[in-house]
Length: 542
Image (cartoon, rainbow, N blue to C red; front, top):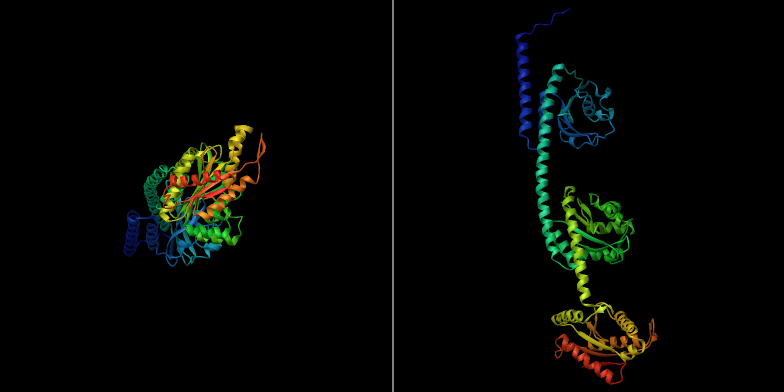
């Protein structure tokens, strides 16, 4: 048996220098782990120090995704320093990282092309012949691996492997510490962001909560969210249907006009169904919010009834890159009344709890505004005739007079009265009389424009206000109303077909009729002339 060679003083000096060099590099690794401000910078610094420690051709540090079961290239020392972090490693291929983490201890591949630890395809991507894999494990958490590589065959000594283990232990602790710090910083930042978002959304909720009209609520909502960098779309479910109609979208009016031109219909006429909404079950049925990063794909599904070219044009108009979206159920009395769509570049999935609470506030505000509007509408509506009552007529009429005077536009008024209406009540009864009044009101309503106002002036007298209409045009409209009533008998339940006529007086807003009462007084005088001259006629007050 050959006796061990006795070390010379030179051998001892070389060993001491190597040990000092190793301790210096290990100290550098420790210092780098303490001084680095973020994980990416730290790992690159550690890769450089580890590569120099082994005087290797390359050193690679990877992270491990337990959820995906795959290796994530992160930092490199050597020729692949710049491009290595950009590589993507499939989860179904053998990697040295997965192998050492499974083994729980260092592994050596003296020939990476003939090793069970790494796939030949991956081995061919790197200028490596021999590799030492060091697992990065801290507190039983698999973090990744440090891989020491040589371009030529290299036999790793027990001393090298031991030093590698010591360095890997330091790196694993550094990764665990930095990750914990980053997670804590992220939590702190997210908490601050959430608090700021809640404060901002609470401010929006307060602003819309003071608005009694649903339309104005949605306009205020859109304007306030826009100031936060968030766009919105409000759809409401139609009564007795699974369809949703668009009631508001916070994009510029010219873009809305372009969209309407592309699809050939007004945006408020478009309907979404369950088939259009890929998230229908989760949002509408389960009443849960949905966060999405593929907003374009969702929008394409919503617009699937249009051809692909039109859809692409619409998406190009409305959406940009890097948008995220939240689809939030609007819930009233435990029922989904609509969907609030939010989208913007700054939305995050962690914002969902805050936006969900906000959506609840929006739903309640919209419902309260709807109920308030209904009550207000009832207060100015003649329920029997389904037209404005005297209060509604004078309230809205005074606003219209003020508007046309401010804009120097024409306005005319008609007063009509049912001829010999008392005889109808006496002959057929008041129930039939009510039917007749209702039918006359409806015939008048369908023969005027949407901008015109019709209301019950009192008894069997109605008033029609005609904006943007001069006296000659008003006379033509009055004649049309007269024939609409006189030419067709009114079918009633008890009286059968009832034939009647109406008389009408017409006047226009002028210097001598500067307000609504004086305008109606002139029209009433013309009505008196029509009755005095035989009824079933139109008279004009000049």
